[in-house]
Image 1 (spheres, rainbow, N blue to C red):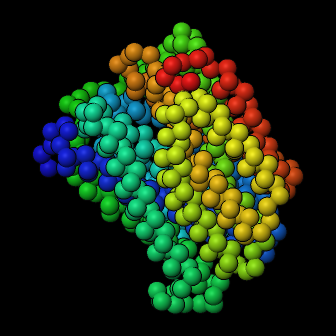
Image 2: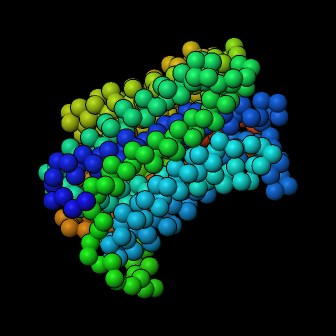
Length: 441
């Protein structure tokens, strides 16, 4: 396929369509079906398993594996992005991580406690594949879209991803609730587990098949394919991050905001990743089928309300300013974490899901735009956003480790959720220290 010119509508649509392809991973695997499946495996084991000679709680174990995966992504992202930009084979890197993630999702079909090590490896590689491919997917945007097109194109990708992932999740929910219609045999519980395993395969196939449209039109890269990768080049990404760190010393507002973001983002991302595990363990469902259906509905509810929340947050920031709005949202998160300690019934969890969705989408969108507004006049925005992304990943590592350790020690995620509220309180205090700025306050 001949390269389409920068700004071409067909090229922009093809780029955005990758969101349709890969967004099924965070929704079906990270948030909805896999956590329910994983929890069901422990239904007769009291939530504990022996790993490397230690008795570990299942939700703590998955938290530790997730933290390690994000640590790897944070370390390799600066290396690989620098190499791909220089050599010009960005599409090859993106394909590699895409196929790694998709095939790992297929591998989850065989996930079992009897083969826990290889099973967790599939889960680990799925995370690496998804987040690794995003590094190169996001970096394509300035290559294929002009500045005035980037916001609209990025938003289109988000819309495609939301629609595609919800469609597949609804199909998966139908398979789990009515397996006989889809020809899935066995007792009710066995058929539901089979349906979940089939869901993992469907995610992998969906991801690979629909990504082909994107790969068909995306340019291969620059004309530097003959360049050799040197030691200096390999570590160039880290040098760029170090340069940004020194530049932060000259921009007090940006530095103080970034510190506050780092702290409260730990809690936000951790809540997103563990919400379903919390609901499966701590809510008193009347039956396993109600638990499965209820948890998936809650995830869908969060997705729907998050869109409304993002719009409301945007309007609030226009009227009151970015920093005051972020302070209010963080205060709201503190209340949610405190309330989570007391919820026990499904209706409580549904209400909590709606409230979480209301501030989930808003705080993420507003945090990134606030960072963008605080950037100094520079053409090197890629390095600043690379620093932002790495900071977010390291925050997830710390957040998941804190959650996992408290869950393991206390045996209850309730205490871990309450402790996450401390990060939001710290976030409020740090946001108040951000210097006044006409664009933000």
